[in-house]
Length: 129
Image (cartoon, rainbow, N blue to C red; front, side, top):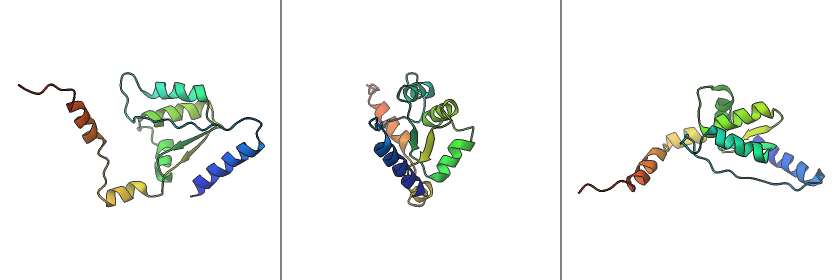
């Protein structure tokens, strides 16, 4: 909740005291690299729009992992780490409810991304005849 409050406080301060318009970009992202979309692709998008604030769809625990776990290789993690290194004044915050991962585990809502991808990929395969 503090993160959301801080985000809105910063956003409203920027809005009311800036001569420029405030722009909000929402970037849809796939987590795993593919030949035509990888961390450098996302990093170049970030460099082009130069955000002051980056919000990640994780809770505060997930954000701590982003900042400390060097083995994480997702597109958004790698790209935002590169961007934060180049632009250290960038504010990077979590933007999801606290305990979301544990809640999903407790409710049996384990991410099923791979199942969805396999189903979509199966549509491209010729049926055996």
